[in-house]
Length: 150
Image (tube, rainbow, N blue to C red):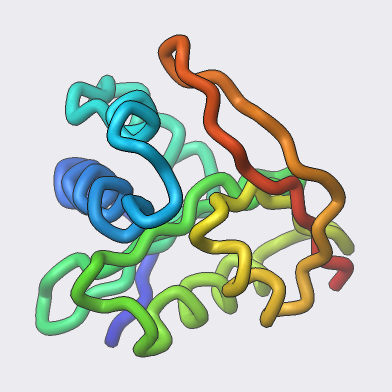
């Protein structure tokens, strides 16, 4: 597995992985309506690329295939961490998270974790601050505000 910095060339593969992961991995914890609001398949490519370029973003590859990606901003907000359904539980998310945590210029990282990813973050010493409801396209989704002190 290779972890490398995100480039614009990765935009479409990360968008595809995001959609596929939400609609497979997260399907056990969220309704179809919630999944469709979270990942429509019609996300704005330019905005997606711009936010990943503006944050510290990395891509995980195995044999040249994008299997995961994540990003963190300059405030310590871990914005995205997604791993393809066929690459779960083999260390991809941990490797991405290790890289993002190393980059963080602050002593604290905050993530808005899905219900699905809660256990992953708890194992990495993130603490649940609160549960919250967020609205996506008129649909409420539950996530968890979690933080880790470095």
